[in-house]
Image (cartoon, rainbow, N blue to C red):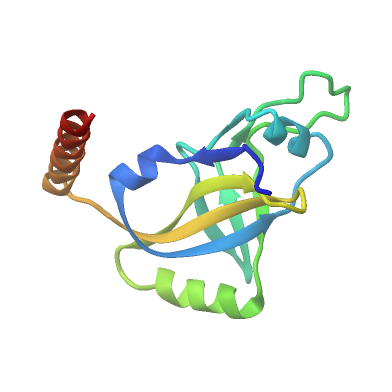
Length: 148
């Protein structure tokens, strides 16, 4: 049974073409998982980057836990992503190609209760691509309205 916590990075789907997706674990501190379970997370301005051979998610905002003490976490700290060496090598090769970047698309809690982050290898859209995306959404919405 999958949890109801499924936080989507809507901006990523508007700003980028999604090429490949990977699911990574996140290295969290004590109160961070409690804030995630309450849904107080924002992926809007976040991105992923390599530091040495490790992958980190930068700018992901996890709000401080309301009932936390002085042991509460820092909301925008860099968090290490947990992937296999093979996946990390594949991603680093892909990122070194021109125009590709790594962005988080979904944050969810799996059936074991662990927080997982879906990251995507993406390529930026131009302005005319964004207009096309808006046009497709509008036509899809109109079709759905007519069917109801």
